[in-house]
Length: 246
Image 1 (tube, rainbow, N blue to C red):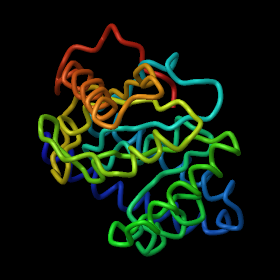
Image 2 (tube, rainbow, N blue to C red):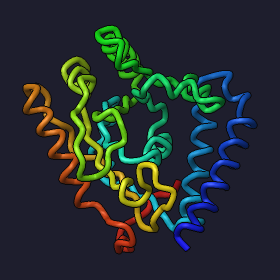
Image 3 (cartoon, rainbow, N blue to C red):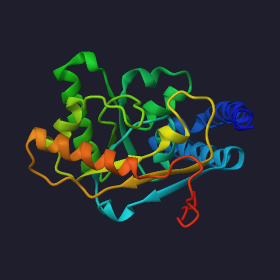
C-alpha cells in the first residue's frame, strides 16, 4: 500500500508541478512573483504529502533564528527540504549547483528567485561569486541557505564539507544557524516509496563566531548530526508534537 500511495503521489506531484510552473509564468516578471508561485507550489506539495502519504511536517527551534539576516547550514538528505524551505523564509537565497537553473521551466523560477549558482569547477571565481551573493542577501536582510556537503547524503553517511561553508562563516557578518532534519529516513534520496511519519526541521543554536577552521567544522557537524539522529523515525509517535500550519 505504501508503494502504491507513493506512485499515486508521484503522478499527482508531476501534474501539479507542470500545471503550476505553466500557469505561474506571469509571476516571472519579478523575483517577488517567482517566489510567490514557488511558495504556492510548495504548499501544494506539503498538502499532497499529508493527504496521500500521511507525512506530516514539523518545525522546531524557531527561537534559534535571529530577527535579522542569517546563514542556515542544513543537512541535505532529499529533495523535500529544498521545497519546504520556501515556506519558512520570505526571500530565501539558496546556494545551489548551477546546473539546476537549466531544468526546463523549473529552472526559470530558480534563476528568477535569486539563487546563487555555483560551478565547483570554477575555483576561486566561484567562491567570489558565493561571497558577493551572500553579502548582497545579508545586506537586504535575507536568509542565505547552504547545504555544506553539497549533495544529498543519507543520514549516517558522511561527505566532506565543501569550502563554501567555511568561507561564509569567516566572511559574512551574520549568525550561522545549523539545521537538522530527518527527510532521508521518510522521503529518501531517490526512493520512490515514501514512508508515513513526521518530517522535522530543527534549527539549532548558532555556531559561535571566531572559531578556527577545524573547530568550526567539528562543531557544525556534531550539532547537525547528533540532532538529526535524535529526530523521529518512520511511523514514530509524534502525536505530542505540534505541527505548524502551512
